[in-house]
Amino acid sequence: MTFLQFAFYAFSVALVFAATMVVTIRNPVKSALFLVLAFFSAACIWITLQAEFLAIVLVLVYVGAVMVLFLFVVMMLDIDLAKLRAGFTRYLPIGGLIAVLLVLEIALVMYGSFDVGDSGNYGNPAAYGVEYSNTKALGAQIYTHYVYAFEIAALILLVAIIAAIALTMRRRPNSKYNNPASQVQVNREDRLRIVNMDSADPSATGFLTEAAPTETASKSTPEGIES
Image (cartoon, rainbow, N blue to C red; front, side):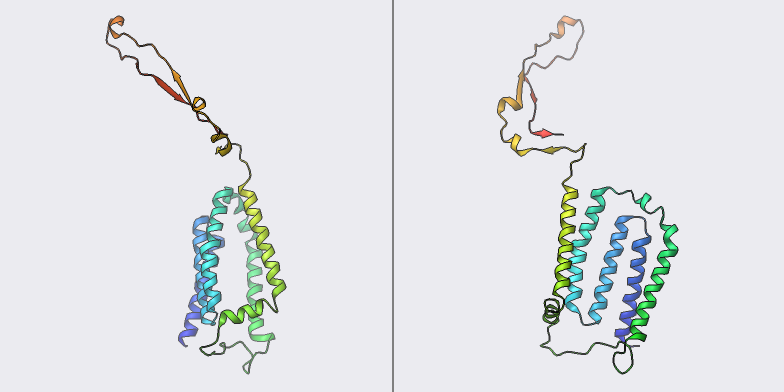
C-alpha cells in the first residue's frame, strides 16, 4: 500500500466518522464542529485527487463562512432540538437502508458499470505538467459545459440568502430596539427633568435619621426607545 492510498483511506474513515457524528450527536455546536472535521477530511481527499482549488474553496467558503451561518441560524431561530430528534430512532432503519443503497451504488459505479481504463475501474488521475492550472480547467468546464447548472445553483443560493435575511428582520414581541429617527429629534427638555425637593431637619425628629438629599435630583427620560 502506497502512502497515497493510506492517506485516502485514513481521510475517508475520518470523513465517515465525522458525518456520522453530525447526525447522531445531540449538541448542535458539537455537531457543527464535527461538520468542520468532515469538510477538512473531504478537502484532504480532493487534494489527493489533484483538485487543490476545490479543496481550498471548501475550506475557505464552507468552513469559514457556511459553518458560521449554520451556527448563527441555530442560535437565532431557537429551535427545539429535543423535539426534532425525538423521532430519530424511529426513522433510523430507513436512513440506514438508504445509506447502504448509496454505498452500493457508488461501488457499482466505480467497479462495475463504467469501464474506465484497462483495469475496468477508476485509477489515479493522470499527472500534469508544471504549467497546468487546475483553476483554469475548472473554470473552462463550469462556464462552458455546465453554465446553466452553475446559474441555477447561484439562484438557489440567492433565494437562501433572502430567506435568511427575512427571518432575521421579523419583529419579536419582547425585543427592544432603537429608533434613530426619534433619537435625533430629541431636545434637552425631553430628556431631562429637574425636580426640587425640600430638605429634612434631623433634629426635629428626636433621633438621628438620614437626611434627605438637598441636591437637585434629575430624572432622565430617554426618547426613541421602543418596545
